[in-house]
Amino acid sequence: MSDAATLFPGRLAACYEAFVAAVEAEGGAREEFKKTQVSFGLVRKFTWLTPLSKSKCLLLLDMYEKQHDPLFRDIIEYRVDKFTHQIELDNPDLIKQASEAGWFRLAYEWGAKTRS
Image (tube, rainbow, N blue to C red; front, side, top):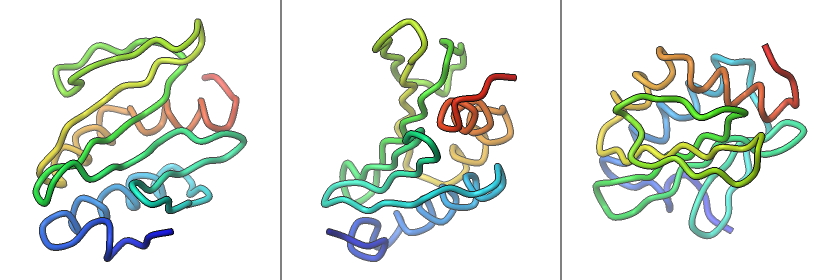
């Protein structure tokens, strides 16, 4: 089991803080730390933040449909109603951009098993 200070030291701390703020802005969710990542879930988990190095993280957002945005490094279709969108980031601004674009809202809906 890990914690925020262990997983996200130094410059990564700001990315973790922006991640938490983006989820809280949607209404908050259950936070869970694992050895290599932190996730948030409602009925099901919908977003993860994983450190890749001392200066980069990988943000994952599950959504019902494939979304097109240059922010996404990759989109993986796991099944007809689950697309995992990946964003590689080295600063919290990319998390803020994802939030402003509505990607956290769509992921939150997927986690709650609701659709707008």
